[in-house]
Amino acid sequence: MRALLETRLLPAIAVAAIVIVLPWFFPSMFYYRIGTLVFIYALAVVGLNLLMGFAGQVSLGHAGFLGIGAYSVAIGPTYLGMPSWLSLFAGAALSGIVAFLVGRPILRLKGHYLAVATLGFGLLVAIVLSNEAGWTGGPDGMTVPKLTLFDWSVRGSDTWYWIACATCVLGFVLALNLMHSPTGRSLQAIHDSEIASLVLGVDVASKKLTIFIISAIYASVAGSYLALFNGHVTPDVAGFLRSIELVAMVVLGGMGSIVGSLVGAIVLVVLPQVLTVFHEYEQALLGLIVMVFMIFLRRGIVPSLVAMLKGWRK
Image 1: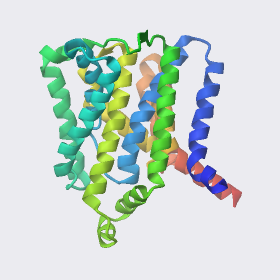
Image 2 (image 1 turned 90 degrees about the vertical axis):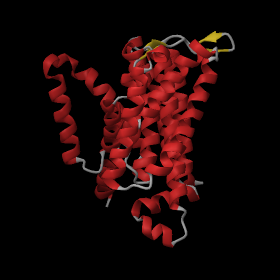
Image 3 (image 1 turned 60 degrees about the vertical axis):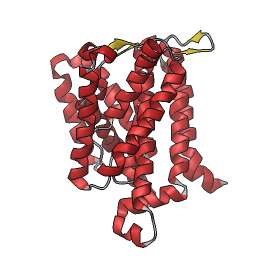
Image 4 (image 1 turned 180 degrees about the vertical axis):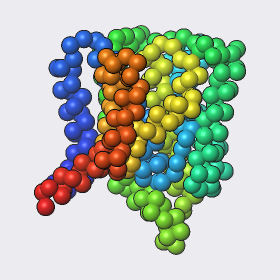
């Protein structure tokens, strides 16, 4: 029981505790909004961390799945008459299908070839969303109807905070269970050496495709939440800079660390809000702080701090 708590449940319990305690320190609804954005991005980053940190597959176009999920909850209710909640699931299913079709050929690539291929996918999705103005509203985007569940319309940042937090904690639990399953151990073996994994009988192609699909579904759900929460969506949600932002969250928080996904999202969502007091120096200071983090905490914030604590205990 003690080993189970230490390996699986402890990170999820810690995140759940943070979720419950944080609102006590929120002086206004603006803080609920920031908290909601943190947990929405953390959900997408968890999925990307499964792909990059555990399976060792680089993706520079993951915001494409974010865009598919975001536009699903906009197009479904507006043009197809689907409820928002059903459009969310439809977007996740569509992202999974697209990931299956795209992942089969591009996951045969490695290194920078794979990175460029995924980058091309993300750019393609952004271009389609921008050019298909009849469906997507073009560069100006489109309004997203509110999420409605059994005649109850979800309103207010505080309500969205609890929805995003509950979904993020659920995503954490599923990711932790996956990592402690035979599939998770196979993914970690693939990360270390694909050739050695093949020798040991691991179906490398199948495992990589599976985790690519799972990470795409994570991103799609996060994109749907982001669109529903903001009430408006533009093609920028699938843009190259958004993909780079997700990758930066993974690397900053710590590749291979589920809790690091949350920490990376906190840093890159909250820090720009804190630095707004410096006006024109905001971006420069943000870049400097991120550089300092990566210079002194090279493995990412969470893995580096854990290693330091273990060293001090010894």
